[in-house]
Length: 263
Image (cartoon, rainbow, N blue to C red):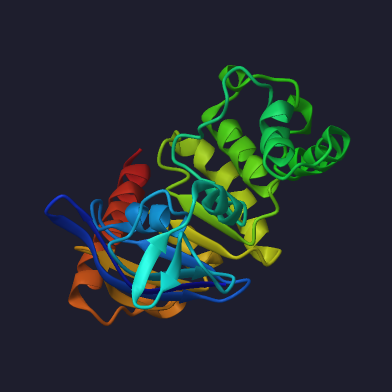
């Protein structure tokens, strides 16, 4: 479903992606982990062509993303073609990005009507099902300002699903949430994984990566340090950089458990 080959990306003189190679099979969940600044979010934005790439290729569902090949050169596609490609790839951001002046229902039906040309009646019918799927059937008429962060993020997931994407990208979807709201978003994501949605998830939620991820890739310094089955990378990482990164989470968990015991 997704193939990334030799992708490089620079911002001025700073090369943030240094030759990324990754594949994601249909129905697979790939979790990207690593320290802040390692290039994870930039890679996601390149997959959706929100950022152009300086070298390499990205294919989604067999189609080259953002460019056409002319001999050995890549020529960027017109914006209309890029928008058509983006319709295949849903993206859920850290900060929800809901339209504040639209209700939950209106947020979910906006793109299917405007981009896919679906009739309003059909879009509303599909939206009812999606909003119920993320547990917000009672909130269809609410505006984002009246929702918790977790509820807003679940609306953002329903909105992404409304476009019937072949691939769903999550850019640290719980990082902006209060800790008590994280679980409700991860529960929706786990249900999507169980239903066979192809997903790439940038996350610091190691329990989610372990339980819902088929494969995990650890990135640091703009490269994939190691990648493999979640049970191997998270439990028995081969590379010292991976082990050092994961040790922070084990230490934080143990500290939290100790504090809980003292109270």
